[in-house]
Image (cartoon, rainbow, N blue to C red; front, top):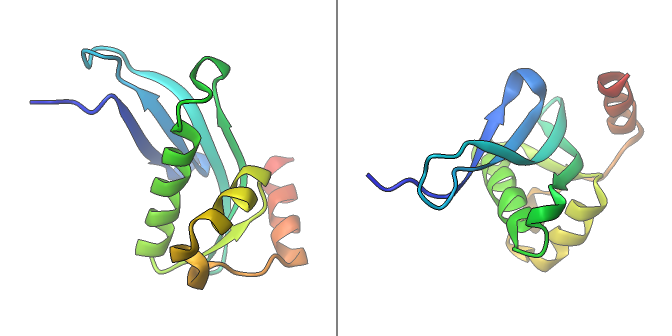
Length: 116
């Protein structure tokens, strides 16, 4: 069995997705990135994206966001980009344009409530 080196996994009880490095031989299991979110009705607010510095420049932030966005679309939800990385990433991927919701004040309030 071949294990893909990098995996994105949702942790719904923590309102985040994590990016895991399984290492070149599949024996490592190290969390190296995350995408934090909060749900507001049928909209998922993406408010924080991060990848460990030692992994920067390898396209892993993009991989993380793509998996997250695909998951949101598959669930029938709309994407609310708040995180600057996601805000910059989405225009480069116009195939998701029909799935983006406008940011509203209740989105900011939901993020504040979650992060308190």
